[in-house]
Image (cartoon, rainbow, N blue to C red):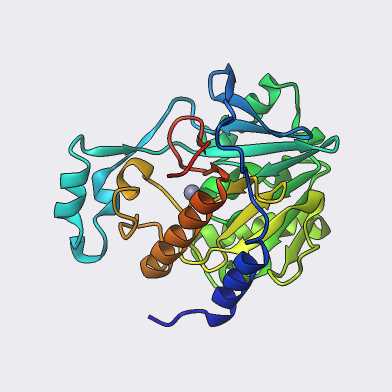
Length: 293
Ligand SMILES: [Zn+2]
């Protein structure tokens, strides 16, 4: 399978550049999430940074084993063996980072029209959509950008929306419903949607850094917050309980399963070595792993 050498090089260069920094050296004092209410928890990342987890599903959700069977069902026997209960916990989360009196929201869930609870969850911690300063997208699948629109209107009245340029360019070429949603979102947000290149290390606010994690989609992106103490991994995992047992297992949603598996292994290794706190949009529970082993 042809590999995007440019993006891979960026990823490797980025990892080398940051190898000197550590995410969380003090593993004896792992942070503890505090549940604020159903579907919402808070976690102190450092003295000036708070992570707020926002579950978009009304209740915790799961994916059927069959989502992970792979091309021509090649992995069906393995998946059934590793996941005998028949399904894998997999909710949808968005993450709010509060830092320097600014609010950065990572992804937006499905949107209220499809039952998304993001706005309700934000309200439960005292914020309205007008309070959000920045929205940073891991990729442009509907369960991540659906919450940006209410019909033909922008849900977030002030926020600047950051999108990896290569991700946007991919959806420009897709005429399916997801491609149409991505283009409509750009039309509605206009100049408030900023496309950034992975090579522009100052593109994002609050010192947030982007790293190419291609595979799930051609512009799928992982973000480092607070010197990578927090790693927001988007859709590297759709069924953690299953995929942590074999990272080659991919859900049908991965556009390029081989690249997705490579990215999964790379970033879980990265997070383990650097003791990052990991937040994933489809991880179980509140979406956070305070420690990756
Ligand atoms: Zn997703």
